[in-house]
Every structure is written in C-alpha cells, then in structure tokens.
Image 1: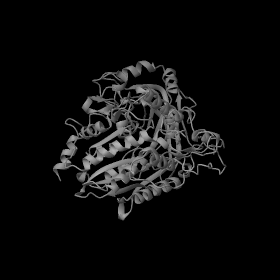
Image 2 (image 1 turned 135 degrees about the vertical axis):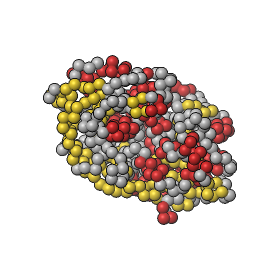
Image 3 (image 1 turned 60 degrees about the vertical axis):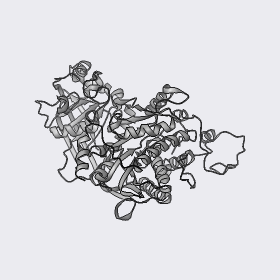
Image 4 (image 1 turned 30 degrees about the horizontal axis):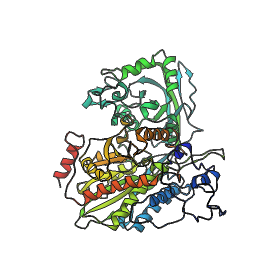
Length: 586
C-alpha cells in the first residue's frame, strides 16, 4: 500500500516539542546510515527513510506522564501492523491484546471477566454486497441514477440475507423528531408504514438559531443520525433517507461515505428486541435538491418550514424508493479491555477512565497507490494512550479509592462497546463515583484552557476547575456545540444510566498563538483527516501539550479518588434523577 507519511494537516501540528523516533540515532528505519546534520525526523519521514506508520521498537515507560511515552504508545496503536484496529479483525484483536499487555506491564490488575483483562462484546458484522445491491429513487417512473458512495450510501441492520423495497413512497418529515419535552412531533398524524421518510440532519434549534428552541445551537440527542433511524423504525417506516449537510452534520460527505461503507457492526441483540427499518441511507445535498425540484417542491422553503413549531410532513409526489440490499452476516466477538488499580482505603468505590481503542480498519482498493489503512492516530490512539499513561501513574501511587481503566471497542460503529459495558458493567454503577472519557485529543500544543464537552452538566466540572488552576488554566464550553459531541462519544452510554461523566478535550486557546490557531487546526483535521486514511502519526506533533492534558485529567481523578465526595449531575440536568435513585438504593 501507499504510506502517507505526513499530510499538510498533521504537519500543521508542528508546535514545539517533538518526539524522536525510537531507532538508533545513527541509522534510519531501513538501516541506512545518516549523519547528525541530515534532515529532521519529519523530513526523513517524508523522504521515505522512516515509515511513521511502522510499529516502533519496544521501549520502557515511566510512571510519570510524559510526551515521550505518549508518542511511543500513540505510534504503536496507530501503526499499520494493527490495520486500523477494526473490531474482531486480526488487527483489532492484536491491538486489544497489546493494550491488555500494556496494562499488565504498567502494574494494573485484570479488571475484566474471569480474572482476565477482557470483557466479551458479542457483535454481528454486516457486509453489504455492493455488486448485488442497489438503491435508487424513481420520479414518475424515471430513476434518478444514484451512484453508491458518490451520491448515496445505504445499508440495513436487519439480520436478513436480502431486503427488497419496492415502490416505497417518499414523505419529507422535517427532522424526524418526536420530543414531548420540547412539544415537538414531526410524525404527528402520519402513518409511515411501508413508506420512506426523508429528513434533515441535526435538530431545529441549530437550524433556527433560536436559543429557546431545543438546546439552541447545541445539538441534542434528537439531532443524531442514530436517533433518527431508531425513531423511524418505531414509527414503522420501511426506509430512511437522511439529507447530508456539512455544517449541520459537522463533517463532510467524505466522512459519510468512508464511515458507512465497508463492514458495519452492531451488538448481537435478542430477536425482536429492537426494530430496524429496511434501509438506512444518506443522500448528498445536491441530489436531494434535485429530487425536490423534480417533484415540484421548494427545498429551501421546506427546510425553513421544518424548524418552525407546527411543521407538517409533506408528500414527495411521484417519488418512490426501489432497493435491494444483499448482506452477509458474521456473528463474532470483540472485547473491551479493563485494568484496575486497587484503592488503599475504599477499594469498593471506583473512579473510571474510558477511551475507545477501535477505529475504522481497512478499505479495499484496486489501486496499489491508494492508502487503504485508516490508522486513527488522533481518533483514538491519543485517548487510549492517555488512559494507559494515567493507569501507569496510578499503579505507582494507588489512591484511597480504586481506579478502573476501560478501553472500549466498536465506538465507531455507534458506541457499541460502551453500550455493552453500560448493560453489563464490570463495576456496579452504585459503586462508580464518576468517570472521565478521552476521545480524539488533537496535538495542538499547550493551551490556557481545557474544553468541557457538554459544559454545565455535572459537579465533576467543579473539581476539574480546581485542578486546572494548578496549571493556570480555566474551563471553556465546547466551541462547536452544534456538532453534538456530547452525544457522539462513549461517556453518553454511562451518562444515560445516571453515572456522572465528564468529557474534557484539549483546550481552545493556544498559550502563544491564540484561539484562531486552534480553530484552524481543528477545522483542517475535520475536513481532511477525520475518519480518513490521513489520520496518521507524525513525529512533529507537540506531545508535551498532550502530556499536559493527560496530567490534568490524572489530577482530576486523583482528587476524586482521594476524597469521600460523590459528585452528582447539577440540579436540573436530565440525568440527575437517575443518579439520585441509584445512590438512594445503595
């Protein structure tokens, strides 16, 4: 395969402290001699003498949280050897074993099932046969000619070898939301059985700009694609078409086509426990506009109407979906990886750290020059490496309460590993004091703040603010609330069960270069590398900035683990009642 050693996006993270490759300083990765006045490490990588995607040689790590240790762990997890870390693949199995071995080496006790480091997560892998499958929309009998990946992506979660959809009429249902607490029902008075519902991504609050509608500019769970498919199934729809829009989704079509193609995973579920529509699909904005125009509808006017209270669904006249989805299924297991540092005084009370170890894996290509491995260096070798660093630090100095470190699987497939943990926790939730989630930590360098995704949710923020002062940092709200990150990472699986969770990200204001610099890097990463093969390791990242962030989150956990406090959700938070009930039953 073609190895992309560094992209312009990742090169932009050259902000100071750089890591040296773990190779003999007098030779490169190919064994060729180099002199001290030759090119820099990253220049050598670009020239091909050092393959940054090769697994580095083993090295000792220290109990201190250091940039050098983080760099080695991130490069290892993001190496080509692990083939993008897809669940249940040889690369994914090897990656999860490496994480378990690292936990053992760092001094953590097994925290999984049967005195192992693993928790079995039963999955079903669905692979669409794209040569035998089709999905198109006919308008008055004339097919639009939608091209897979270019115009549309589609699949099914039904455990059936073939799903056929014939002449399923289309109806535009706005955002496809039923939210009684907001007085909103896009399906009111509508029978969608056997029909295809067409909807917008995100929710009315984002589109309207009204701070009093839903949660204003901040995406709610109702804006997530996962909710939209589930609600349509509850309503009895035959298929769903989500209209992609980059700003509303917070990612481009390249992310949709890359993430929803290839094998897809779901949890093995009891038969009949959850309904699914026959086809779950996305369509590009341009082809959606073409559909509406060809059927005599004003797309922009309907979008405007959709975020107004009282919106009523609109038939798309003469339009029908005709589809055949041929899918093979394999029932297999992946695994969460867990290690424990036993508390010295209250070992039955736990502080939890969580990060997902999986990524997208590999994609097929007939072009030998195409990079087919989605290495997932930022997403989420950074977070997984950070919780290993934190676990190693705790193992060297155990706190009063226990600490459980959990690397979960199948986050990229819909938070499946954390969802399974939430239904079968390794530690009872009544004994889980609180948790921290680490996901996609951009190596942007030192910041004067720390961003809290879903800011204003729990008392964990008060503790984080206290330890942030020791680094002369303050707390900031998510600068991109419309992206709905609070509902897009693993902490939400436990939050929905009442456990206080905090998702803290790297800061938004660089100590020297300001907020604009961080915004530029974040936007470039989302546009160019996120969920793409360009998300690769670089020696020129600022690992000391990452170490500073990991140290801060270590200090947060240490503060809670050495106290008798039980942080709760703030009064009025949607999860407060669940936690109160959980604690009262103890």
